[in-house]
Length: 485
Image (tube, rainbow, N blue to C red; front, side, top):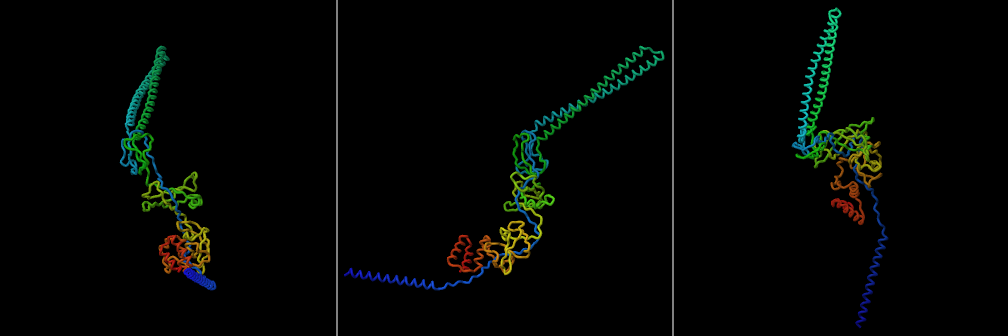
């Protein structure tokens, strides 16, 4: 009996369970039928209007500024070399790395013992040569006196011969007397010839003495120069660099001791591409003296100097392109040779051009122009220059019209926008956190906020998750979520 009772209870419970499940399935089926039979209501589509910054095209005359990089160089640099070898016995207090020296200042002294001995020897040799010349000059004077005396003696002998001949013609004299007078005249002439030869020899001696004196003078100047070479002087005022000697060191002739740089004569070298170089060449091929500004950031302090383009390189280096230009800079305190500087060169002015943000152009040099009913149109401009975040364009037919300052993938031809003009008091204030984002993300967020559209729950979660991955500020996410609800 107990078995039968339990069996009947189990059958009853099974029947109740099956009945409940059947009722639940029937209820679900009715709900589905009711849901499928209902017509889904579609919300009427609404045009999305985006807010976009616009700027007006106003043609004007603009002087473009080309920015490049260059290196500071010294126009006057001198290598200080030792003209004589020896031991360094003295160094100036300013002879050190970065030391400032004056023009003509003695910087280094090398042991002058050998040079001093050579100078004294040359002075002694010069004194001997001078004494020899004076002695030869005195001998020449005596030789001249002897020649004069011999000439007088010869004249007397000639007069005596003439008298003897006259007496012989008158019959008073004798032939022997005439012959004796002729022999005396001949002897006097012979003596005169000897005196003249002695005088000529003395004159030759004087010439030799003068030549020897000149040689000794040359030797003396050479010795003085060698003595002066034991001192190294600054040829001009400047700053020392690469000092490589110390007092007591041994240097050889021609060894480099230091480098002298004139800090007041600096220039900047920079390289331009060939198209950029063509902007600074006149019609006759001459290089224009464009204004140049060189600047350098030293520990947060900007140093700047102005100058002009002075010359260009004579040839293009092997494996290089463009042109290497040089600009002389004046009043450049703080600049040093080797500094890497930013160079801004003023180009010739351009007429009837406009300046626009670089984000207003696409790759094909097209802009979005604000048309009727605030709808966008596509316009073409000619790109002339790029300057940082701006571009200089020539827009024919677009004078006075407004263009979108920041293009985004959400904007295109036919899209209606709400223009935000510079200085518009009615424009909503920009969120600093929103401004800090890049233009594309900013435009996407503005579209979400300004569109005020509702989204399905799945799409909403997906968008909010993407924004969180992009690390959008929490306050912005809350604003977007409120707009989508």
